[in-house]
Image (cartoon, rainbow, N blue to C red; front, top):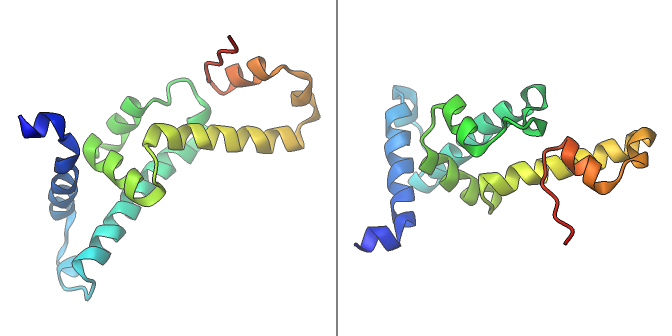
Length: 133
């Protein structure tokens, strides 16, 4: 019952289990502390997900959902979620939305044609659902 109301307590367990499944002999002989290895593993997971997001600007496509990212990466959902919270201090969904907004800002700075569209139209282009009510 405790775990039902506190599922986050298992995040560290899942990350360690995942890390152990990926460990090689070289990793076992490294001089890093457990905390450093933990941070390295979290960054490694985030880097792998970032590569998926950046490939062909996948983060701008409608099929870029958290579930599809989990399926593409073959990394357990809890490991990805925990790693993003550790490294970026936000959920993966918030991270994707931030990437979309940052991308939109860069496009807006460089593309005068984009400035002719309404905010709702631009949001639609990046698959945001905007509610102005």
